[in-house]
Amino acid sequence: MIRRSRTRTYGVGALALLAFATACGDNGGGGGAAPAATTAAATPRPTGAAPTSASAPPSAGAPAGADAAAWAKWNLTPLAPAPAPPADKPIKLERTGPVPVFSDVKTSDKVVFITIDDGAEKDPKFVEMLTDLKVPISMFLTKDIVKNDYGYFKPLQALGNHIQNHTVDHPVMSKLSADKQKAEICDDQAALTQQYGTAPLLFRPPFGDGANTPMLNTSVQQCGPRAIVLWRESMQIHDMQYQAADKKLKPGDIVLAHFRGPKELKGATMTQMFGDLLARIQEQGFSVARLEDYIQAPAS
Ligand SMILES: [Zn+2]
Image (cartoon, rainbow, N blue to C red):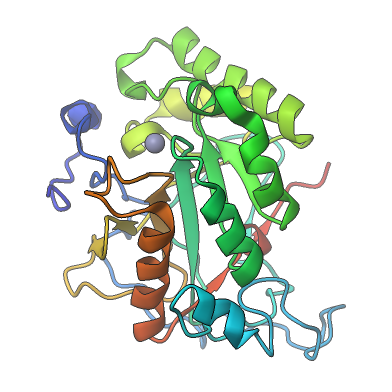
């Protein structure tokens, strides 16, 4: 679609209203176009310093000894288990000040992170699937899209998945005044905090729009989230759209997907879409880790 139409004009997202995957993956570091080079040498991880021993089971990804039968039920073979979460988190958030904007995480772990947005499709089969597979996801929920059934997301949350902020009604943020931006973020923050018992730490602007504008950064700061999260790939129906020219996953990439059903997926179901996503990840030799396991929340 328009994956390489990145421009420095923040309003470009307005043109992308109908495009569910925009090219808004510019990260705050300005390195969006550069392949995520292997950084193992540059940032050695203090193995051994961690309270979690190396033999501790990973909290994310398919459990070791994954139940092959559970995967077979969904016509999948088990994903490789994700490594234990890093003790020294690649992303460290501050309690105050400007929030970082990122679309991937610096790591040499062969993992990617799945984020699922909006919340329109509430397919009970998807809850069953995640209960079986225990693949970690992060959910960026939009109040007006989920408020008819907040309860749907609670069993997904109970699996250890975090709920994050994605505005009240999914506007193009750069077209709004500062006050309206603030209402979109703060009201979603309040509703999600009340419903799910914890305040979202992360914010994703609809379409990725306005992510790098000072105004949106300020609005986010005023409402509580401490980072703006974009993406490197977006799942469509059977395959991903890549921002990278080589169309390959890189360690630490954040993948965008949506709660969508047959109407949006040309007849495919949410679980078919998610199964295909896992297969695309698996065939490139990656496993799935939990995004929040790579982020250090601010000291409170
Ligand atoms: Zn969205």
